Image (tube, rainbow over all chains, first blue to last red; front, side, top):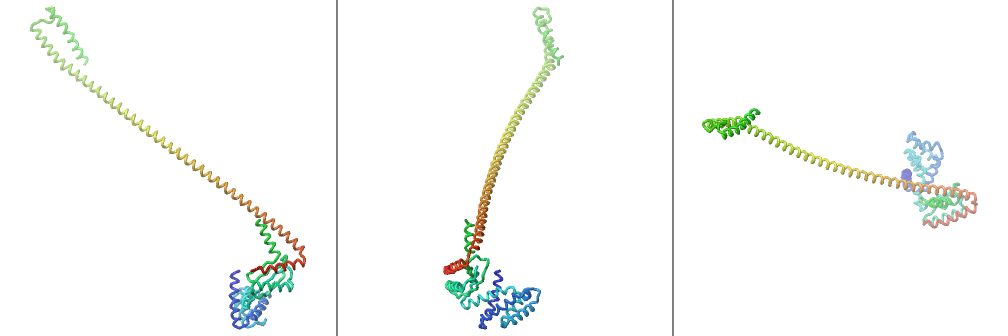
Length: 181
Length: 188
């Protein structure tokens, strides 16, 4: 898993440096996310990217064609073609995450992935973002999703930092204390 | 030899008769030239007797004495040899006895040592087994306690989760979220 993330980071960094040289890392990132969503969302496209018996040049042509169809710039087309040609199509989700982290770092911001038992109100989101920004010294982009498995509260993850404000976390602590005696 | 001795005895027996005859005058012996002849006869007879009878007798006696002495010497030597052999046998017997005693003592010592080692080994093994059993028992108890504690906590938390899930209302969720947001400041 760690090797996979390392590989994804290397690809993301290569794209980021080229996009940065082009002066539009955000735009390239949006296009990368959009085309990746299409590639991963379409089972046939996903198969083409991941099946090893399809010729590398065919994988490259197909990925680049889909990117072109989605209106991605040449850089993103070439990048996705390269990823497909090298047989790294199954790394795309991680590459998108790593690229996003690089762009966020460039703009002094961090992405907070929040899982909550019930949907947060706008006021709660604003307050949570403000407190996270104060605590981390970065602008926070909040990405919230409702997780039915949670009992109550939320779990926020910013990079490697995890803030557990859920009842589940508290119950887990109680369980550990009980088990330790 | 017997014959020679008989002749000697006869001659000796005749001597007193001759003496008596001379004393009575007109006996067997007369003081005249016959006496001289008789003396010569006697000397010749004595010589013959000495040559034929006495010397062989002496030689025989001496031979017998020598034989007896030799026998005695041999007997003495045999006795001495027997004594020596007896002493040698006694010495050997004593040495054998001493050696047997030494072997017995060594064997007893070795047996004692072996027994001591066996007892020590058995005792050590018994101690090890007891310790191992005690340790295993303690580990089992500890594991059982841990498992029981884990099961109890799992059960308690599962029940708590169900109760909480049933009883939580929207205002409770809002309050929990607010509390969690308030704790974010404590991150650093």
